[in-house]
Amino acid sequence: MTASPQSPRPSRSSPTSAAQEPGNTVTTAVPARLDRLPWSRWHWMIVIGLGTVWILDGLEVTTVGNIASRLSEDGSGLTITSAQVTGVAAALYVAGACAGALFFGRLTDKYGRKKLFMVTLAVYLGATALTALSFDAWWFFLFRFLTGFGIGGEYAAINSAIDELIPSKYRGRVDLIINGSYWLGAIGGSLLSVLMLNTSIFPKDLGWRLTFALGVVLGLVILLVRRHVPESPRWQFIHGHGEAAERLVSSVEREIEEEKGERLPPPDREITIHQRKSIGFGLIAKTVFREYPKRSVLGLSLFIGQAFLYNAITFGFGAILTTFFDVPSGSTGYYFAVIAAGNFLGPLFLGKLFDTVGRRIMISSTYLLSGVLLFATAWLFGRGSLSATTLTACWCVVLFFASAGASSAYLTVSEIFPMETRAMAIAFFYAIGTAAGGISGPLIFADLTESGVVGDTVLAFQIGAGLMCAAGLVAAALAVNAERRSLEDIATPLSAASE
Image (cartoon, rainbow, N blue to C red; front, top):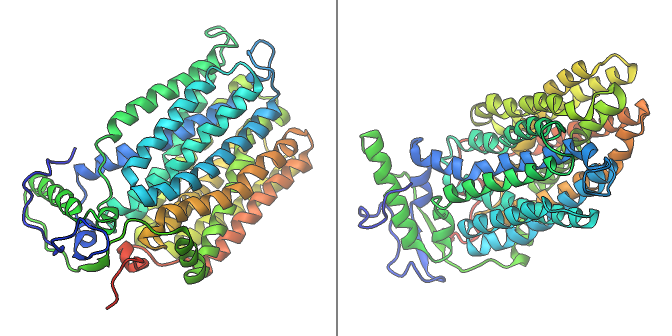
């Protein structure tokens, strides 16, 4: 928890005395002060408070995928087919996430990061709890949509807050690892589904409900931790809360100096901005698409590629195992836990390279490598050369690289557009890219992967691989060298005063 903001040290920036009122011009060193901070307990608090919700998302999506076969069985308490769970319900979850990202993304830029990442988590918790009470297919579908609605808002609010609070030296690796922590939840969801689907422990109509209930309990714990995560000082000084930003950053500096036992170096730059309450949607759209067209193409390419790969193919992995390799439905969780581990290890081990080797090389190479390896997996699968175990091993290698690439999509769109558009940019590119791959994908590939025809599943693999390779080529040409640079250097704030 941060130190008390009372009686801060004299400010290291020079805000005007009227910094509380939007419309005034203020000169501040807040961005430079945040970027030159060493890693500390305060930063760990940010990571834990904001990043843990990705674990919940992974738990949520993986659990539903693994319990699909159980929900479709007689005695589950629902009249629903496996294809409806992995197809319709998955598409509705993603549609809800897209709608939530757009709805809450706009509010996040207008009302602040902290308010919205508390609200979105509350929406998620409520919808998850009501999913556990499902008594008919329509109820299950409705609250899968609303659960996604909350998660979509989380993506916009949290990614913008993370990038604005983490020093530029560490921003790439931290963003990738936090987004990659989704797969820790996926591991938990996979193993949990094995336990919950064991009818010798839980009845068919109870185990899957308790799984959702556990997600609610974990979410409540995260909600308690998240209360201590502060508002973004970058958002504060632009939106007329300059003095609050100064107090917050001063208290953090004092806390870190006490922890490290030495004085911090002075900031090396200042920025002058015109404070304003909000930015109109028209100006946001104009800025993103007219001022940064190449960056817009980059963002869309990265999101569409990773969305097809993950939402359309990996979430049908359980169906592939049961259809082609006769793996019992209660055992698919073991296999998914293995590929989920590969997904998490990718950002964990490769994340630092995005800050050292650089964004362009790492983004393009992770997309291209995962695409080429998936083409090879499709070829082996089509020849009948793979077993359930070796297919899982191939997916582990593919997703080691794909996960780092997919996480970098969120990093990219959250740092290459101006501060005032950040949450909305994340929301827009997530919504468009995910709608293309995450809504149409499950609907298309649910039939392909469950048809029992090898060629259909090979085609599913090849489409995902092709889109990842295409995105990698776009990144090689258009990716921005944002490593170790201040957000304000990468994209000048719209509120910045002219020189």
